[in-house]
Amino acid sequence: MGVAALLLVAGHETTAHMFSPAVLALLRRPEQLAALRERPERWPEAVEVLLRYLSVAHAGMRRIATEDVEVGGVRIRAGEGVVVALQAANRDPSVFTDPDTLDIGRDAAGHLAFGHGLHQCVGQSLARAELQIGLPALFARLPHLRLTARPEDLGVSTSSIHGVRPLPVAW
Image (cartoon, rainbow, N blue to C red):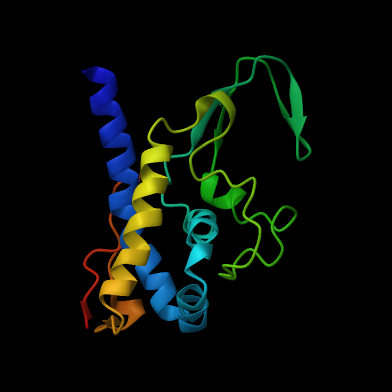
């Protein structure tokens, strides 16, 4: 029961918080949404781009160095702790060209939205499936969806998973 509950919470928590910023990002970039409407088969790749671009998990990956290592000119000694900021890694210009621009046509391979290696989010498959089904269904069902507030007036959640609350829309 514990693993099933963890899977549900891990997949649901990320997805629930990912929907509002993803909808907001696409409503703010109507040309990107139009491209997805023209080619709906691109939704799975678009979800990966949105995961990289939005990086809703802000808790960071905590690791302990097992040996002395140098990263970016900084020496980390064995036994010292390190916190990897996922959102910063996903906006690294040495990995992603023009990282602050939402472009659903880009390759988002290598993003760290769900962690990396052995320490990846156990709910990532569920979260991806929910986003790949839910976002296209939302925009297909409500083709005239639009914001009813200025984006700069919207609030964000204060948990370790980033989201937009509320997201006032009309259709």
